[in-house]
Length: 375
Ligand SMILES: *Cc1c(COP(=O)(O)O)cnc(C)c1O
Image 1 (cartoon, rainbow, N blue to C red):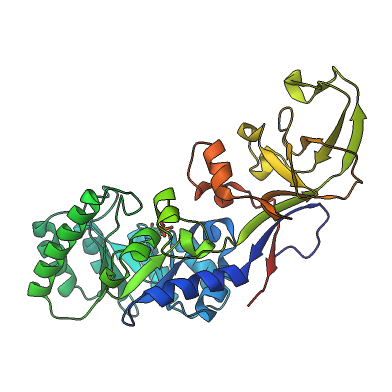
Image 2 (cartoon, rainbow, N blue to C red):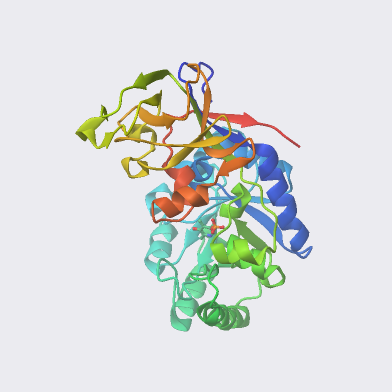
């Protein structure tokens, strides 16, 4: 991506780990169920093109993104696999989707009505989304389903190739709501099959649902967070049904090291004061890189040991308290393993009171991604 690296801060993406995680998932799935690699949001911050290529090499059969923009980036990189867009694409942009053979999501009769008025060189492929309880997008009732299916059956511009839903609580210990959604889906599917006989692809599960119930996943499972080696929740981590390897790590290097007298303050607001004579190191990463100010107090790894971030994180630089003097250029690991210790995305998510999904996504594209091939 960046050929010229001038700064000493980078994210490493281990494509071998992506391959391993896909293999682990495929081993759990029945033969009739394929992996759809979810590479939205620049592959959760890992790099969409590199991850998509690796996923397809590792046996994924389809790609999924949130936006038409994201699908076009994959086509520009000459990826020929089917691509599904999860979000709503404006009817006026449907010709662009057709031109690049991108499958869209549909859940509104108004959308169908507008697409019917277009003149297209060939019909747009569409997966119909059913809202069984997520409450985001999707049609919700049997009546809507009947109406939409009829509209599509008569559409000169739409080819229905799939139906799907999405679970809201597949990663939780209590599966009551998950089961309710599954039953609603089965009812809708039953109705759907009673009014149309054209075969379509059916998919319902994200990482969590697919890891826990691989045999219930129909034709595709949608592999997001676990493809990147992160567990969808602590519940899944504890269940231990799958062995995942994290693909993302974040590193920097000391650019300055100094001995500071006791009682000196560090960074904006002078929020940290040295308690004794201390070694303070500076690393070139800050909140403009997505290393946000709330991470003050978090540890980083230097020489395989934990050292705390002290003082306010600034836009471009962060200070850490060192246990001794280290040379400029010493590697600092902010996410990932060093020696026998590691700082997982989960630990950073806990510090920020959020979920691990946010962690690689929040590291901005000012931080170059370097790719490690692996097996
Ligand atoms: C993002 C997304 C996924 C992937 O979910 P993970 O929990 O990351 O596996 C699957 N399906 C839909 C519709 C999504 O939006």
